[in-house]
Amino acid sequence: MFERILFPTDFSEVSLGALRACVPKLFEMGAKKLFVVHVIEVVPEDPNVLDKIEFETRKKLDELVEELKDTGINVEASLGIGPVTPAIAHEARCPSIEIVDKAACEMVDLIVMPSRGKHARRRMQIGSTARNVVRKSSVPVLVLKYDWNEEKGEIKCLGDCEKMFEKPLIALDLSPCSELVISVTRKFAEKIKKAMLYHVVDYGDIEEIEENTNKAKNALDIYAKKLGVESECIVDAGIAAKEILVKALELNSTMVVMGKVGRGWLKEILLGSTADEVLKEAKAPTLLVPCR
Image 1 (spheres, rainbow, N blue to C red):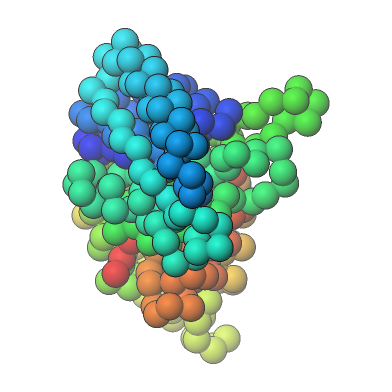
Image 2 (cartoon, one colour):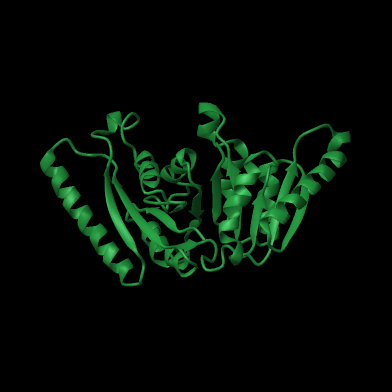
């Protein structure tokens, strides 16, 4: 199991809900240390105002730490400072950079964060901070999925945190990245009841589909043996992101696991069309593994 976990919070309803209801499940499964991080996004130029904000924020963090310690979690909190003014935010210490740097500093092996933060009631597909953390992180990022329940006027978690590792859909592109995805998945192998190893053939000419499909099935069989749990291997042809999303729903997968490959500045921002689309649209928790 992942042992050192970082959870960035903006104190929103979604963030606190995930921290209180979902993160403790990871510690019941064997996690050892939690790092809670908050970043003051835009720092006022008036130092007196900053002092007040920092004091109030540290108080909130201290209260969270005590609350989590009461549940038996080994936790510590830290406060990061963002840019001085909005005008230079694109060049300064934005929240995602602070979060990623903290993860590296504390040598965590997983970042956990909800798909939405402050603006949960907006019909956003994924918050910008979560997306940027996924884009920049050198460690796996688990994005918990939440939505806004219009009828009840409250947030709802899409997925069962207690069971999210039981039936993962592991999307493999059969590149060297797939080895890393399997390696990360093995961290929670003992929690898996049945894994689905999945590949989408979206390459080659029409007459090559059958041959490529057979090659992909053979490759998935090898990865399944390396994973070492009960598995099923499926290969489909089509548009990768679309097929992954459909298959995850069809199989009632408890999690989607896939690699994120950086291929230059523009590709890194887009995450690659497949990973980006799955991250935005998946209804289950999504674990993105960096493969740089």
